[in-house]
Length: 595
Image (cartoon, rainbow, N blue to C red; front, top):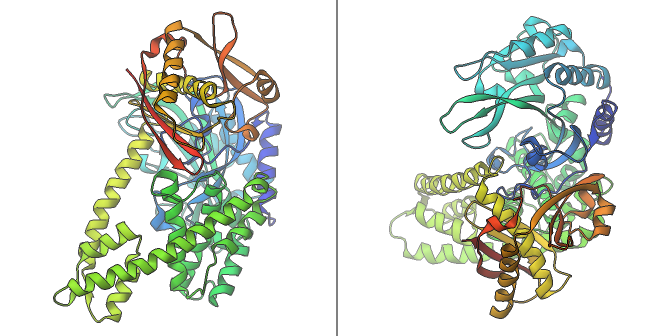
């Protein structure tokens, strides 16, 4: 098997599926456009949510992409050889076009004929069946017909070979996963569950053929979807003979610089190696979040960004890195990805300034935390620093527990680590439930209320442009079944008169009972038509344009969007603005409801 670069792997994948009549999708934003109920795009399928749920895609039923993704649910796992927060995902989709035979055959062909992986070094898993759905014998037979022997096929349960639903209900189905042998010699046991250290999962084909109902039943669906995923970092490592993703070209520049700054060697000391990986991962992820114009804050994406930067700084202390370093590492990330992500040309200055600003701010927070620690120390009686106080430093001052622990050691006192961990567990449980709730409301939350509020954001966007000026642009949105939240560029607080004027325009249009029309066209045609576009440079060759048209046929609102929308806005009811506030420099936020 020949060595391969990241660019070659991505190019080979996209070109292979292009020849199989798949349209290549542009790399969508890391901030979900079609699913504002989650913080980040966590898989290649997220930009396709409306189409997986049945809407027609402008580019057809066969699609392929490489998609930037972010997952922070397992942030504590980062530091081993395979986990990352930011990663790139290769994927191909069939929207009610081809099915299992074609999907599996294409996967096998790409692995064995394009990547030249020996069939002897592959094993596959299929769903073993349960009370909800039968054993996936169909996939197993397809694999056998392609030359994968029976001993190379293992049947696993729902925890391994089943996807979804993302929430309590919605689309879901079995999957078949492909594993590559990374052990020595020839594989003897073809079962990743029994000898997981010798097998690395590199690809996953999901067969979305069921819908889970409110009463817990799994009902077969007519429109079936193929959804696949192959992680670039992991696959690149496997193809180049590495068991450690951080040894690939993707991380080599970062790792070398961190080793230089810390005067530590990679791979020699387990604790040092873990710290080096965490710094490399977190700075790379931070650069990509900053590239979306997100700034460090205590809310949502900004909170994740702040946590990543500060965690990287925290681990740099373990390596005795002197002085500020984040900007230096961020430049390495930008230079490596510059060709793949041309928008870095515009965002580079912003990224470098903001990451440096946050590093300086955190170092000041560390000084403040030490001051607070010393005040607490004076109030302590006995020889134990309380876990509650340690958590207060952690939560309120961003002061890492490890540093509190070190300071206690220096002062010759113990720390109640058990109490701290219990406080932390409660905090993490609350955060996790919050994130899960946010995610659950995403993929299948095309409820009537959400659809109405999504449509209302189009009216709000245009009303703001009429009141404040045509330079107003959407900067983000978040929609639940209860309210909408809309971010836009503006330098000052809106007056009560301006807010009422915006409200009145929206309600006037709702009373007129205007129709919502959808048309497919090229991006250029949409822009010429006057369509608003959140991600102008990241759309495919064809897009969906939604227009809310007056009785004269002229559009009041015209936006490139993927839905969902009502057919006529008279169903929206009364629009009411609850709050208007600042979010960041030059960005305002409106929260509103429909009554």
